[in-house]
Length: 317
Image (cartoon, rainbow, N blue to C red; front, side, top):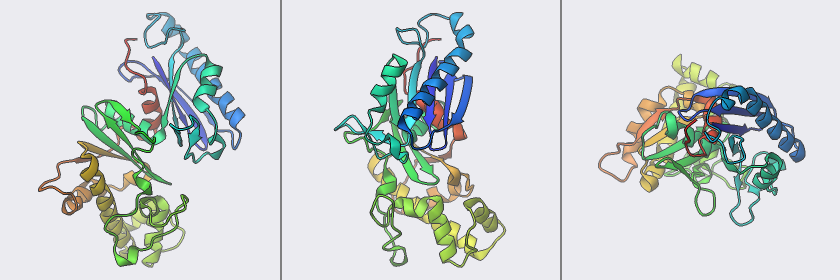
């Protein structure tokens, strides 16, 4: 059995899964805000709660099944950032209280076992590649389209992070083949302008909609509903979004050539994307035919926490 932890900005969620991905237990609590020590304690509490909840079932199984030699469950954690290969400390985290800390080593000391950390987008990709929408694919690119825009790569069942631990960070590349009215683009929190994230995030879609004369202050779900109802500003905004997404994903295909691209995050619920975007990206993919599949995620909001558990290899339970 393996425990997966999703360390989010507002909640910390944990699950226990068996060797075939069946969920055995789940626990969710609020994330302490801006407090690193309290975050560590909360993660430890969640792990202990989950282990207690499955203790009876575990005692009836093999003592080594899905557990490391100390007798406790393996733990994988998805975080909104990554571990710097240069320093071993957390970098690029939206939860800024994590930055500069040795999160993995601190938790290994508190939990008295090895743990594995990965970026939350990598965990999403790992989940969908393991037993989700991309199960069986050799190469999977998992995309997060929400408050931010991120991505994760899985090659033959293993997450690929890269020598700089930034593999999949396509959201901070510039929007490719940008037209005059798309330039220079909005400012991004990373300090640059015109990042893919500034176009394809929820805020990016709202900006496009409002620039085209749409009602200010609507969320992306409301914009989608208005597009379905035929409102011109909403229809145009969604059409532009589809084309921008196609261009951005075409560059991923040109570099990585994945078998499957899986969409996650709130904007993955725009139903037209799965039909329109693969048609649109054909004109930018450097091939006579682009056979990459674009799929909706299978596990929804649970993909991140499931992928964290899948960071450990499969053992018989």
